[in-house]
Image (tube, rainbow, N blue to C red; front, side, top):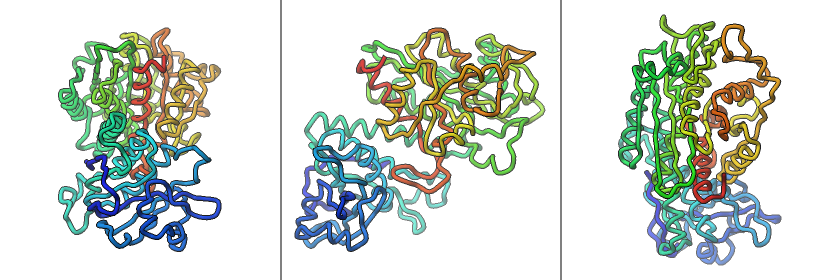
Length: 508
């Protein structure tokens, strides 16, 4: 993991591989952002002109390299675009700082140390830059021949160290901001690792073992229900989805408690470690990335551990509903009826609508503890991708105010989201002549139908929201900002921030 420190050193005398500065897009050309004063001075105040000559405009995501001025111990200056110059007296947006830091960290892969001289007006800015740098430096090389050898000719190790300039190492607020950035980024990157791990190495049992090890390390109580316990408890949804696989299902409960907590949050994650579609087999071309179908569980896992590391004064319980959805002679068939943990029966019309089945059991289990709110996270429907694209997740819920609050939280932390409705008329499409409800309804509005199905398994009077992260959970395109190719850790920062605000009494 990339090291992150606050430094009081002056940019010219700092031994590093590069100095990172910000450049913004002004009305008349590029504008050198605060933090780069020493670099600009060394260019006799003409740095903006030099950057413009090199083609820089200050646009978001833009990178411009130039040799460091004479007298600097670092050989390179890396200018990263921050987007538009803020309005007068307004600081740079936290997300702009995160993205710029992420781009810089990715660009500097292979470097030992970089000094980040981006705009820092307050502690939150240092936290945003640190978070962006640590997320941008992420790489997943565990399965590459050179992955364990940073000096290998054909591979570049992640940026080893980030020194944040302009901060105040002895200031409690700055120290706390950096410590938070490290905890959140490390756990989010752990979620990315899980999503990127191939399904022959990550199944429900091994995922549960990873959760147990992390729980022990961070003082989190953990309970794992294996197949026998699931049968005894009547978890028909999880068992039904996992019935076709040689790797048995698991339900993992992670409980972080604080002696000062006044609120209790429950997070529920869909953990399909591989989704073939089951008997309703996915067509060719739709299976290759289905290791990512456990992204919701990975995000919930990471959020609970982050809450523990941050010592938040709120109780947080994570439920990981883990199964592998495979076709075999023992697999659930279209037309089968499952009796869920809640006692309701579900007619399975499509075995590829399996995520809602495992979530239904976990939601009902979470409801039995009467938390103040439940949030589930899942790569649930392709319909949500069609509606919102690859970078935005949908938010549904049984409480409009809570749904709106979650949307605002997601926007605050830089996770694009959009509130979605739960139209009552779509519920009728799931009526079944055989069971209490079917797992499929109308094709149009499929993402909303899935949300309505999940609502059936939330206990009465409990505030609940559903995050469908099917679009942003796995990036099949090129990296951008601090987002890598592959697993993204979507949802982690929204859950952590929700827990922080709840602990502070600002929500609920």
